[in-house]
Length: 266
Image 1 (cartoon, rainbow, N blue to C red):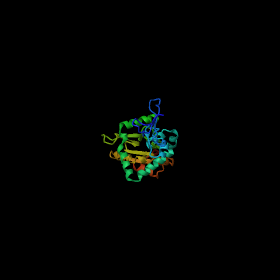
Image 2 (image 1 turned 120 degrees about the horizontal axis):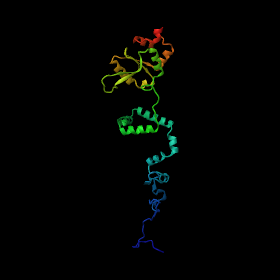
Image 3 (image 1 turned 90 degrees about the vertical axis):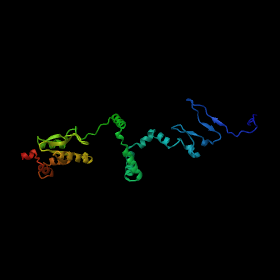
Image 4 (image 1 turned 120 degrees about the vertical axis):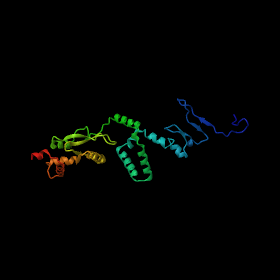
């Protein structure tokens, strides 16, 4: 029977190692060492292929990935997992939690806000191009709204009909010499060039445009224009009630030299 001793007559203490055969692609299978218990044998990560060994036998036996990053990447490729996490309810809950954190005023939240504000990603041409390309792929179109190029609103058209021929819809008023942060002209919903009076009929967008509208009114006032602002719903209610002369809309118009056609007929 052959001896397991080396040439010097001493028994070798080196544990034999079992090598696996090669895969079809030429890469080797796992290498198992008889010196290491089976439950602590190295394993290959199912995502990146990196060989890893966990600290405990239970972790090694249950682990499929070398770390949390690979585990998360694998999960995000599973349709059933995406169907559970990418829902409007989950997105709303996540957004509410994030907003609450930003409003908490914590030092970490403030640092994150400052970091996000400093990014100004839309100032980078490559980001704008990427966003435009994605919107085109989605066949995105802006929502229908009032304003330049979209036609008159019902309140605007009705009001124009009772003001008289001297009034024009979407009247452009030139600001003269170009000034920084100002357009070349402002458009009025309804305007009378002889009286230099404009009427703006505001919708829901006015809530988010108050600063821009105030800037517009101030610029036109510097050119001698008076801008009167009313809500769309106010004008429609006033017209539907017969444009009573005691209404504040009627008194406002009269105090600025505006007389309606039906008043003249009366």
